[in-house]
Image (cartoon, rainbow, N blue to C red; front, side):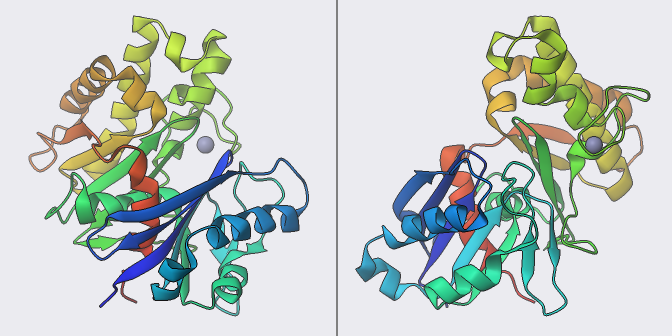
Length: 289
Ligand SMILES: [Zn+2]
């Protein structure tokens, strides 16, 4: 049984580390800014320092290390995990699992940060006891993770659940992925800034409604495809918009989920708050297989 683990959440602006216990409580935490650099070793040194700044007595009791990191990522031929986070240009095919495992001398598991959050929702969040759900993040980008039949979906390279690239506006804006009209290109914080010239916190009521509607459209496609009754949504843009965003998303779900099994699919705000990513990183170590 896991008593406590070292949890690491790696984002484009900050790297958070913590000790998380068996019940999903953060016992201790630390954070550093993610260096703006092209040198992969500088980023890793910042990560290592954030791990080492946790009290050594707690680190000594940890039995594993779990990591949530921005995608994409892929499994190396030797079984390692190579990460290429879009918002950390210094890391391209960086062997994160091997390097962090060597640094901590602990069994180390790495997964996509949105998938880690999905695990967290099922562990201590809004999906406890739910065997089929989508967890998604609407912030500067849009990501997600899917639990189906009680199992987190991985896909061929471990990137399953990227709901941000469900197309919601045919012939819409060019997305960073190269396609047009993805949810991320139309409804994310970055998209809202590009479309309106204003950051999401200055969005008009119409802009909030549109973002919610398009997120709802993406979720509806996923719900119809996979028979999912629940989507839990977090992220600074969605939670910052609040009730009008979720009302618009739900209205679109009600309009577009018309099959007997998908009718009534709900989208709700995550209640995990800022602890979710770190607890999710810890949950990565609890997966079997
Ligand atoms: Zn895309």
